Length: 357
Image 1 (cartoon, rainbow, N blue to C red):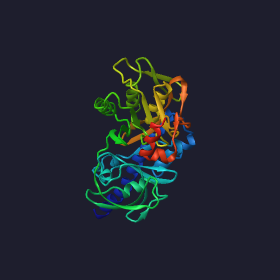
Image 2: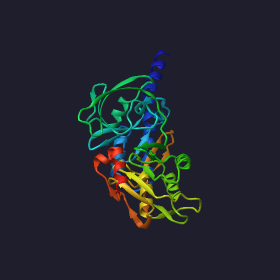
Image 3: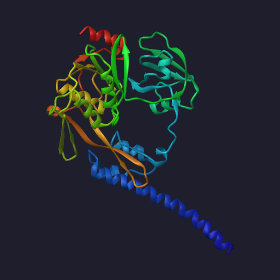
Image 4: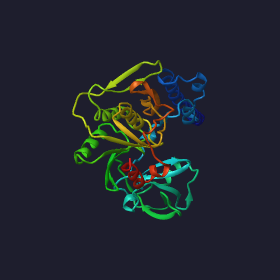
């Protein structure tokens, strides 16, 4: 009996890892099949065969720079982490933060973009954004010491920020130099158009309409087209999705009540994906003037597939074609009004420039 007991324990030790390996192998094979059949750019078999459970994320990036897999435990992780309340992005190799409205940053007097030098005395130049984001989050009430530089500053300053729970809204109404601006952070299903229409209803008919897309790095493609349709006459082409076989599906603006005020869109190198498509539609249709810098050039769409274990695979499945057959993938959009770097980063200078046009 004792020998049998030892045998059962040993069998258990060998069987358990084998079961896990089989599960991981199944997951990787699922991903290979999906990418082989549905990815916008069909990957080489050598790339697919190189995918393993150990190098999954890195291997996916080699196939599709915007692909990712979110393992099921990560989907169930606690999302109540507190933060400073701002959009973190990289510009010319240095980290910057754009504050959200009504956030810890704005309550500390930060109304515009800041360049981030250090977090709790840790220098962040050259540190990946994901690691910086971890430094800027934590338990509610925790105090961070930031070393920052406001736009145009000569010397960095120190700032103490207490972390708070953050709810990011896809549309913010802010006032800059006496001008109301609608800042679009992203395109969220069933939210962005609703919030935009609600904000527009509070503005008088004489206020110039300015939408700020400088920090809009994406969101839902169809929400972006729905918002673009708000500014276009019925029947106007919005965009077309193009699959790996060059098959096109075109979308058009519905006939409904429209916003007809002149429209200016603020763009930058951070304007990408759904934000870039939205701006491109309205520029191509002659409906909006773009002011800022050339956009990123990410005019493709990603989709999400749920895997058998509950994990999620994100991958690129469509290129987006703008009206008149315009493609902005890897090219970006050229602004109608070119702004300087300092004007793009400094709202006061930006507004002075626009008023001088």
